[in-house]
Image (cartoon, rainbow, N blue to C red; front, side, top):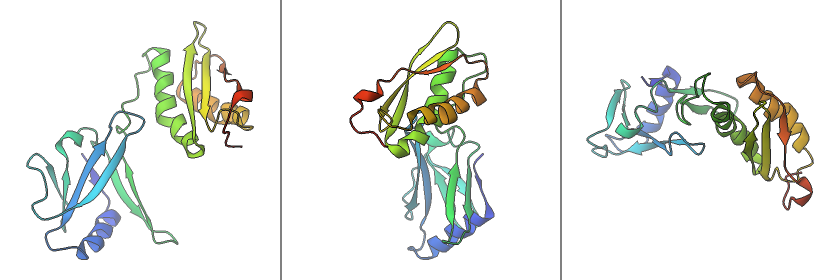
Amino acid sequence: MLTISPAARDYFARLLEQQADGTNLRLRTIKAGTPAADVELTYCPADGQQDSDEVVDCQVFVLYVDAASAETLDGAMIDFETNAMGGELSIRAPGLKGQKPAEDAPLRQRVEWVLDARVNPMVASHGGVVGLVDVTDSGDVVLQFGGGCHGCGMADVTLKQGIETTLRQEIPELGRVIDATDHASGENPYY
């Protein structure tokens, strides 16, 4: 079930007052189940919804949820937090980027999920990407830095304090976390 906080409901109601009569909202996912997954929230003009859309009655407006996105958005929370700049809308959808593998899933699958869901969104802000090269029989994880992380002077800090810490929080039984990148050949490092 999708939840909309009272603060978000009131925020949307204020926005919709400025739109043509009968305008509501429509929510759908894009590239669900992938690291590039996102949520799209748009105005939905009167009679602009799809016949297959799921209807969420928000008392003062209707939120139409794309039928193909409904399962991914199950358990999602839409909230609005007021701050000094006005406020911030957040949509938290736990299943958006795919489901976390079970604890007994192969180590490689669990490492790939952590890289895709937690690590790469963090390093993407610096134009970086981290790929999995190998998981050894002894549980060591070999990584390759790319983009802005390839040749970055802070790559070792990112590896030890960011990536390794994140991997170990999710997968405590990991062996070593090894950077196999030739950073000297990096052409456009962030730092």
